[in-house]
Image (cartoon, each protein chain N blue to C red):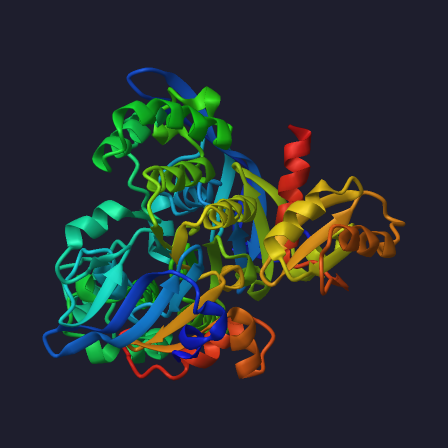
Length: 258
Length: 323
């Protein structure tokens, strides 16, 4: 499981997420069971698993929203046990339920998040213009977010999540429900962010999207049961696509809650 | 039951249905067209899929078909009955699972099921055979509150509740959205079994891979049906030669493919890119040569047949060309 961490190709790379024996228990139920892994700078890391496998709980610990029962972790250079506030300031987060305010205009949403994440006052305006130009949203600056098409909201939500140039952006099922064309446009934005050195930590139920990741982990019953590049995983299981890998892995599950 | 001149039995007949919403904000008043001239029929025991992204109009259509809202135009018969004058009877004869989880979160699994059975004047025992295969998964948690269930379990409970009165027609609005691939497969296996009970099923989904599991599908985008047919016909009608292209640097490869003047479309498709050419007599060696000039290594190009997702992307491309 930890093979790729010691892989010689990765030795030189900066680690931006490091989880050591992370465990979270709720009463007698162990939601996340002793997981250990590293994620490197600029990597697109796919975090896969069935519903109820423990992905959300693990992600909540990594983003400083929940304290582990035991184990330790460093995210963006900060300790998840002691420095959760610093972690929150240094990461970006986007879920399927975008955190955009529907009744605010496009520029107002950008302004609001820039303020919350402490982007220096004098940088906000030029960077807002740059963002709108890159997205081709120049004419939508004063549009209320609720009247934007879903695919556009999604692009805006992602741009807002990385506006403060975080080291890592966490994406929780970012592409659920959008059309196949918008889904692909969105992944091209993810590639661009990764090219700029932003680490992308992403969960998805679309197995073709798992192929776009540099490495993926598969959680089963609270444990990380596999972690490697999509190609190596397919080779290891002797199958032709990630969907089959996922089905093989999930069969190991004994959790009946899902 | 309504029969046409060929003696086909249709459980759902939808003719030229349109729906507009008035959207009032403090700043503007606009008309939004949610559905445009939708017509289709569903046969008895058929599994009919409505495939399309969020915002395409799927839920609006489901709410019209289940008598919850009225269409602006068009005629609809559900189980042979008129959707306006006979809405009360229709409600007794159909099952509806809305896209948003709508069971009582504070009641247990068992209590929810009992509520639905009682509302429809039946008992769990009477139609247990219909839900048995699904309920065995839920049984260990029957004393658990519905709000405490995981996503996949909530979905199974909702399906049980929509089946407990033995409906003739089942309307499932995005039952698998946000559900992992394994639970999705389980859910579709259950639907296949229900077909054997001669229940017509209308199911909507944003997942293109689920289209192949339906008897017939409609592809919906921006409130319009772009195509209605059996899945194999839709993929067979794909009119371009499709190539899968792989290389070492997939991200750069996609951008470079798009920059080539003879490439018509290029989309990322899992571990390869799917590419069509402007010219149907295109010599593929030219592409290999261009990519080598752009310093791509390990280029692999194969002719592939189209999937439903390729067809949907093609329809989006054609639509955007139309303006």
